[in-house]
Image (cartoon, rainbow, N blue to C red; front, side):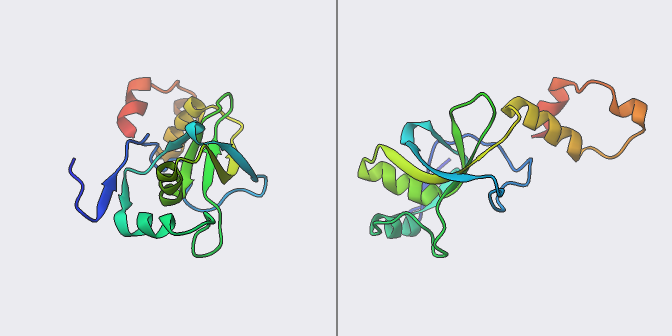
Length: 143
């Protein structure tokens, strides 16, 4: 993949949008400052202009005054960044070691979340068909 002059490509972890993330944090989410090395970006492209604009800011909030947002699955220390990639990238360029964001803790593991998302994406079937185990190969092909 080649970035255009107006885009920056970043290595990322593609989690798709299986749980309807990209909306807003849940009411149980909280603000924390964590090591920037524990953050996993989930967006592949950044706008050069927006990244440069954040480099000029001292506070990492968006135009609505909101902090970046990420989710953490049960049993993991990694926070998957959902919103705030330009702000995260700006902090990386500045050499910051810590990043302040809103974190939503999920009570399921990443694997459980993917299975649940796969099941939710399937058309309704009879009860006996729903009880059959999910084929991992089918699940991996769905995303």
